[in-house]
Image 1: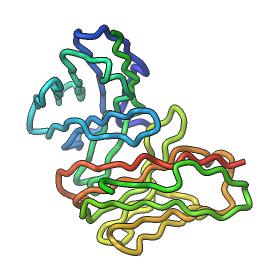
Image 2: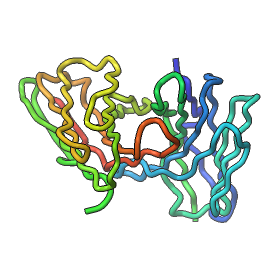
Image 3: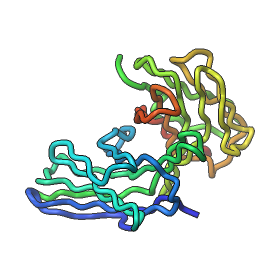
Image 4: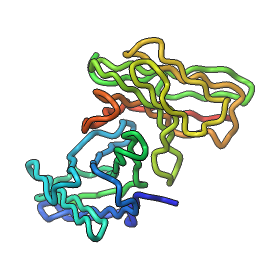
Length: 114
Length: 114
């Protein structure tokens, strides 16, 4: 049973507009969430993270929102650029249960069109 | 070289072959990981090493054998694999396992078992 779910396998957005990538989780013990970006033929690259004690973290064009009551987090990219086209993975960590191991979603492929 | 490197980048092997995947991290990290990424599946954690000691084995078949001779190097020895073992194998490292540090990934080895 998947503990971290990215229900949209793909998303297409126009350059300059907002990209919103969503992630749902089932384990209320997760205490830390991360987003990774992956280009073809490369490994995932860390993008941004958020602790469960926060509801928002911002880094430049990237903002992650956490809604603990809904067990939902989202990544907003504003404005979207063609170079943002990649697969985005959501990951979560259960410090107490899995000794810090990350649980990944299946990923969402973002295409930003010029 | 910087970051996390993996060799080879591509590997084709028969079911009776023995081969090894190599990972090296130049970040001074104390924890290293092997992940498997199969098509349309989330990243699956295979092994975790912390300070060169294996701390977790997520029920991986014995035909996969990890080795961590020092904190900078990690190997995955392969023997008598099955076609369903064909996947992208990713190595990652982090400062340590338990604090809020992200994992840094290598580019992966694309393995095909024929």
